[in-house]
Image 1: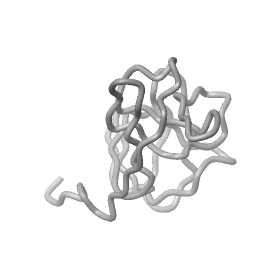
Image 2: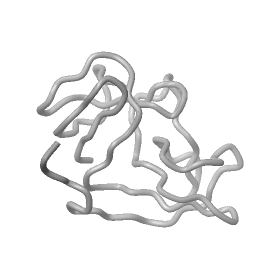
Image 3: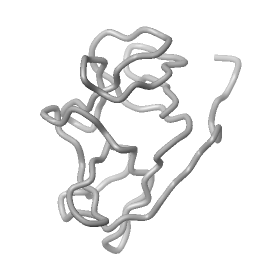
Image 4: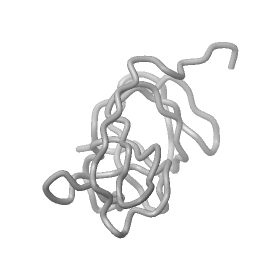
Amino acid sequence: MNVNFNGYNENVITFIADKSLTKEGVPVKISGNGTVAPCTASDSKLCGVCVNVRDGYATVQLSGYVRMPFTGNAAVGFQSIKPADGGKVTIGTGGRECLVTDFDSQHIGFIL
């Protein structure tokens, strides 16, 4: 791709990391007061994407462009992004409405 969306409207916030959150780059959900945990396929919406986890805290990107591992069929434009197993996302009803800007066979880029 000849253009790059990294950095667009990026906003991050620090949460307490649930003990099950051990890696970055995964979709997360609010799991308690000020705490985030990794999403699973049974979760309908993600709150953001974990960009760093260290010493019991997680930095979570709540808006802006992200590129993540993807499963399923993709399309550009406004799509309903949902968590999938394995730290991936998919397109499905009831997810978070996001603007998909690009995708390939394994990754999808979208604006939270």
